[in-house]
Every structure is written in C-alpha cells, then in structure tokens.
Length: 222
Image 1 (cartoon, rainbow, N blue to C red):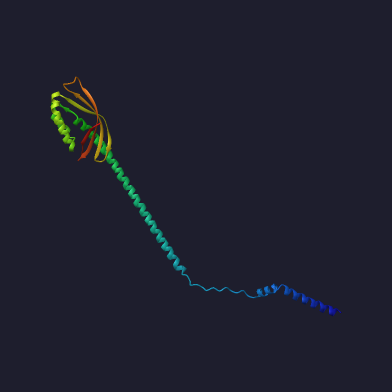
Image 2 (tube, rainbow, N blue to C red):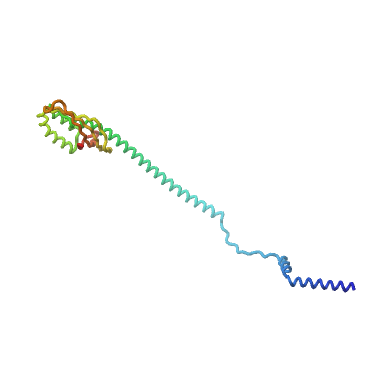
C-alpha cells in the first residue's frame, strides 16, 4: 500500500508539471532563449576618414577666410577714417580762409568807402585818383564815368564831402569774394547850405581779392 501511494503521487506530479508546461510555454522558451548566446550585429565598415589631415586643413582655410574678411573691414575703416579726416581738414581750412577773407575784406571796404564817396572841389582830381586805387573791373569804369560828371557840379557848388563808416558787417564770404554791408555817414558842406549836412546811407560793397589786395567790384545802395 505505501508503494502504490508513492507511485500514484509521483504520476500525479508528473501530469501536473506537463499540464503547466502546455498552459504557458514562455518559461521554457525564455529558458532556451536565455541559454543561447546573443547574436552580434554586423555592419559593413566604411572607408577610414583621414581626420588627422582634413581637420587642420579646414581650420586653416577658415582662419585665412576670417583674416581676409578682417583685412577688408580694417581697410574700409581706414579709408573711411581717412576720408573723414580729409573732409574735416578741408572744412577747417576753408572756414579759416573764409574768416581771414572776411576780416581783410571788411577792413579794405571801410577804407575804400571813405575814399570812393569822399571828394573835395579844391583837389577833385586827387580825390578821384585816391578812390580809383580801391576799385576794379566794371565798377572802375562806372566810378570813372560818375566822377567825370560830378566834377563840374562839385566845383560850381564848392562841395566838400567826407564819408565815414559807422558800422560794417559781412553778408556773404568765400576765400576770394566777400559782400560787406556798411553804414555810411556823409558829411557835406557847400555854398548852397549853411553849416554841414549829414546823410546816412547803407551800401553793400562786393569785394574781390586781386593779388594781395581786396578791391571793390560792385557798389549797391540799399
């Protein structure tokens, strides 16, 4: 009896194990899969890249390109700086030339005004000769014609005219041409009036540089 029970139990255990395998075969497959060695992935090796020779060449080309761009930028900056410096130098020189021209032309215009618009019947020709030293161009001809017609009247009326500049200023100025506005007081004595008559006038003289001197090329009363 004990031998029979032992065999019966063994047969039941074997049937139970077989049924469990049929119900879930995964442990067996996993066991088999775990026992097999993993397959190695195969890949076709590509051609070897000469990194040691290609990268330095590329870096050198990039460096040369950057240096060229930097050189272009620096050249442009230098050119622009030179142009600005040249412009500033020319502008400063022109401004200085205009200042010098204005100063000298105003001084010459003051002296010219006194000579041109003054005369004395007792020495009329000398008065005209003094005025001619300050005129040029077409205005010199105009001045000569005007004084020729004035001589007879000045001698008849025994006129003495003295011009004085009370104020002067620059209208426009370049290095070779300056327009000067002058306030002129003309003191006149003659046989037709008692005492001295004063006329106040404003005149614009156009001055041009002739050689080293500034001369009147045009006179306009305003």
